[in-house]
Amino acid sequence: MTNTTAVLTCTTLPMAGAVPLLFNPEKITISREVGYRSHGSSSQNGAKNGETGTSFQRAEALKINLSDVVFTGGETKALCDQLLNWMSPGSGAAGQALAGVLVKTAGFNPGLVNRLPVLSFVYGPPMLGFCYQVVLIGATINYTRFTGAGVPIRARVTLNMKEQPSLLGTLPTNPTSGGLPGRRSYTVTEGEDLVNLARTQYGSTAHWRRLADANAIDDPLRMRPGTTVYLPNPHEFD
Image (tube, rainbow, N blue to C red):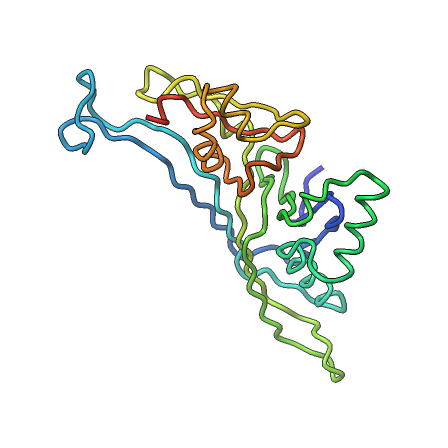
């Protein structure tokens, strides 16, 4: 079934919720930057083994911008507040209290309280439309209409999101194309962190910072079991 309404959804406690975009975005902008290495006389590193040209190293996460999203009606303020709350995890007395209850009753990991929640952004049919796992990193909200009592009933919103790492972003490159082979993904198990991953996968804990940079991870000691991380080719550490 075609999804004709764009929607942002979070299923992670204590930030679970959904924001349907009943008036779909006027414009969706997607951008990406890549890491690369130049070979040949123009390269600062100089040519290696006669190589020339530019080789792919890694693709940065997609940046997704939704422009002029319109909210209207009595739920306008509540929906906009949900967007803002997703960018401030664990904030406020209510959020901290709920997190405390989850820690005690459901074994909730307290280290996840201050992490931006992962959202699903879906718009359009599978394969032909948009379906991304993202974090919301920016929102600009302009309230443009109010009731006589001062309740906002219309808003125009711009949203900035960043795609989260996935298996599609960690597929091996083609060795014949000049890319670096040996790129792979790894699923984190209970008790693992980037420090011991660096030791077991690369033989040295010194590489944990590069692993953190490759996966945009702020806290290397707090890894959620089941998380898929990107393991760069060891040659990328040279």
